[in-house]
Image (cartoon, rainbow, N blue to C red; front, side, top):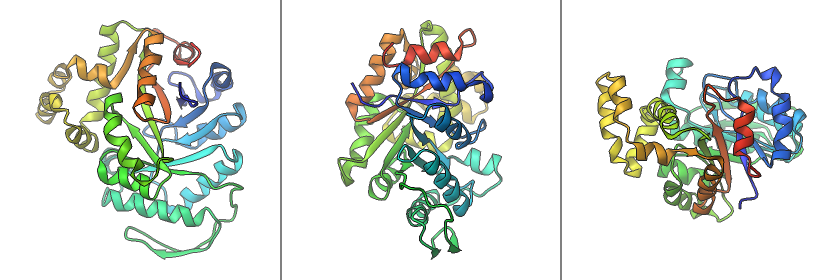
Length: 321
């Protein structure tokens, strides 16, 4: 058993202001971590600020904050504020995000993503100490910034990583990696790359799960999620690197504009590898398999079927059952 058992917040299908009881129940259920996501729902920091008050024993993390969508100083201030609100319990996860979020939704150029994340990590390392930053990086420059509210403890900085370059960056300059959309066996490929730079480098994995749902329904939900994510260029490149050739027909149909055909082309075994589903006890065993393969902190991303309440799914996936 792992010492850590995380969950993605906030929860789908419940207004944020009504989620207090869900957050408060997490420690008693055995959850140790709450990690936020940022795409087209809530921002990464607000749910964690609420969690700092509602469930003060949880470790909190961002998985992830895009390096492109906030200015360097604003990102440093946001991270410092949360680190001060939850001293010693906050981990900052940063990453490239994707061309969809950065370019299409935020109207920003998605250029040199590796360098952007590298420069952001280097800047944050310096800025979060309270030292004056006056530096020219490859992708941006900061002139004379000094953080006015230095956190009592420096938060670890983890890098969202898919392929070798970013995985090595996560190990070399970050405190670890946040990985996403992979099977437990894929962990055996990615985790050793991060730990080339130290056995203590943390690997956090976001794991999608649909518990206590019949296989056909779960695979239908999972198939839609796979199509939505793995046709994004960065995720497609990741799975091509992993050798998941069986997704080729999906990619071809998607490129041709055949969305229905793309969904139908996703094989059941791929869905079963990437989406944890089945009875709750089996789901817990599947999540433990990620830990056995090299994950330190599994972070469950619960997918709530239309006929289920978020609280039921959270309880079903808890380590204590």
